[in-house]
Image (tube, rainbow, N blue to C red; front, side, top):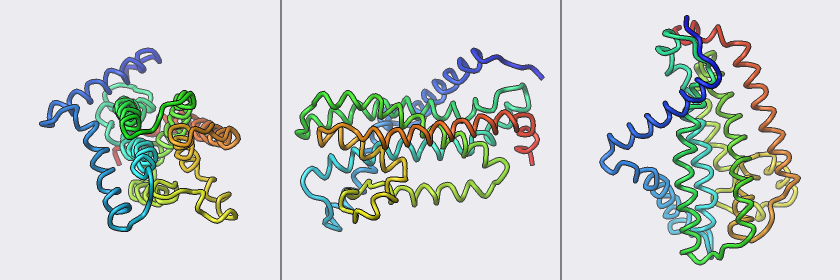
Length: 258
């Protein structure tokens, strides 16, 4: 079975991601516009439900909602797309040797490219909405990179678990939905009673969403201690995933065919 090197794998990841993105755009009538329309549709639905029907929120609630919802959609879509990526790549896997990281990393690359466009539009919206840009917005870069690390760790772990435990394909979406409502997308975590805030911020996504709001809306620096916690969790997840991929590499082609 033919093998490929690290450099070739990276080239294949980018090439496959680029081809898939162009293919997705070509089959949709609105093409690349769906990269923007889809998160906007999610925002409209949640805004109508929580701000209009349930009368939640207040001043700047649209900005508050967007700065939580857009990063969350990136995270949840990346996990959802990556979890079945190894099983979906079984045909290629049986033609030549490909490092199994290729499959989830391709999905992560596709979603990261889409998200870069959405983040740019988020900043433009905040400016139009009346939120003044400040030097704290520069912190957006390390926060995005930190979320990318955490998302990568979660996605890699989900992708390696699903082939061996197929029921995880049903458990993960439920876990994401629970995590969504425990990340402070629709409410201010500072409104939670102080003795529960410690438990609430054990969720790394809750910390990251608060970071986005602190630097983009509140003109505050992110909590570096909490971000160190997210960094450690991310590196642990990536390290565990890397060990599992190395350990189970040759077993995966047989497992995905079962």
